[in-house]
Length: 131
Length: 139
Image (tube, rainbow over the protein chains, first blue to last red):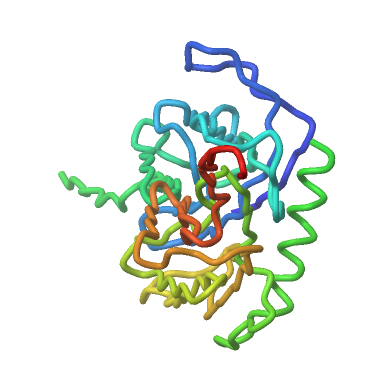
């Protein structure tokens, strides 16, 4: 699977009710291939499960995750090593995928996508008729 | 996408350099931690995607908190890797606070990959209100 990261493009169609906020981070991903499907595992801790949006259009897979409200102080920081923000990343998928069968699960802050491959046409046996 | 992305890339680079076949990162940078003071307690937060609370060891001693865990990666049979960015191996981070902690009252939760730790300050560390008794006039 060819993967390409595009930083600038934002999805043109959003299924969630609220508008997308300017995302801050690209999630780290592992991408695997099994005989039946591709598996994408993205690290997106702290998301609101209802705020996760997955789109697959014209061979481009995009994932967006909205952060759930998090208590962060305005002052009194002792150590501040990471920022909190929404996630967004896109991938180009050149192989044929059964788009209706794409599944997405969010657990322990990991978004796991499964993209089943299109079943290759099974060999057909042609019966030869003789007179 | 400016500062946040650059920071993330830097962090990933650091992680990539430190993690080789399970080498423990003693003065590690993973996971990144945020620590603040909310008056009564210290609060610490770390992002640990993929971890459950049972997988994480928290050690509190004096004015320090140590966060330890490991993630082992095993490739399943028949699977091939196209991209691997998630870190694995052992890690350990220590946060030192400016005051003593009441170790018995520390609470921690890990939800959706975010570890939140509340560390109440030891009574001796909290500002104490001293009541002043007014004595009668000095004779």
